[in-house]
Length: 473
Image (cartoon, rainbow, N blue to C red):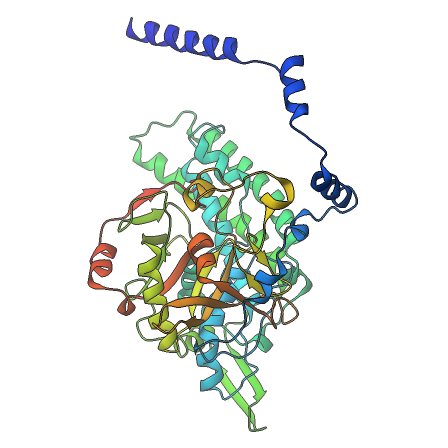
């Protein structure tokens, strides 16, 4: 009876909303049209915009661009700019760029870089396995189930965050660039990914069909039947992974299990290094390079600060760590980041790089674009509103490696080392104001030793688990 009343009430609410909805009538349209007055300013703006599609460029205040210089009081000793080309591997490049200064110093080789292709191979391979395991785990659910739809939507992609690099490094290690160079498919990942996703969606469908066939007459408490089902699912998965490995090897090359690397160091001496990828990795990462020492902090004003959040299933390896972060106010994050930079330790960070930025000039400043003066309308939203309306969110990872401060040692601007090549930005770098940090910075990986006791204690909490399709990811 209660359900009947509830449904009736819902129908009435829907009918009421529909009845109150109004189309634009002649009176309303006349009022709206009358608000557009072609005075001298409006006519001038219209003349400009009718012949130029670049609205953003017309809102730029060049004085605000030019007032941001590229000199810094504190700067980590970094050398060289990388280029991820047409790929979504910024998280991988940034994670490796954080380790590159140590490698350059150890091997006395300023031109040192890692093979991103090597780790990209294993990243996509592991993501395919994770996808297949999720398909098997949810095979008993309807194909329209929200979780199943999420997995089938994009089986593998080249995006990610720091924990994915950590998972790969711990399992597969790293190698120098010369050992497994980039290929056309690692530099431009679109067709490789679309090909793999087409195949993996087919494989997901086939596995679900096989599961339905094998479980049609099997009781849940039949242990032997369940074991046989698990074996059948594993066999099907391995068959798919063989094909995935084949496609990756054809397009990226086959990753080495050991290597001999020759290079000419800064002194002009030819050096030979023999190693395995995991040994090479272990020799470069900082002491205690693990989630117990290095933590991802985030500024997300839509959620409670001093709480830990875990993004379900956001990883690449089955056995690896999920994306876990401690939500903190910006002033606390900045204090810790500045300590790290002063200690000559760069930091992985991700932000909404496309907002209020001039990537050609290498400047990010929320005061340099004035849409209101050009168009006569107000766009103001705070960070929370921008996130909840899906206007803003983290889109790109870069390395924070410099900070400039005022006479009281308070930050006024910061700098990223980007991975878009030396021709982008200011010689490959992006300088952003402290105000831009507040508005568009999201995630930073930092050594816990730079956090206060309150933050360290908060980081020990049991995480609040968020779904993989949450609005922030």
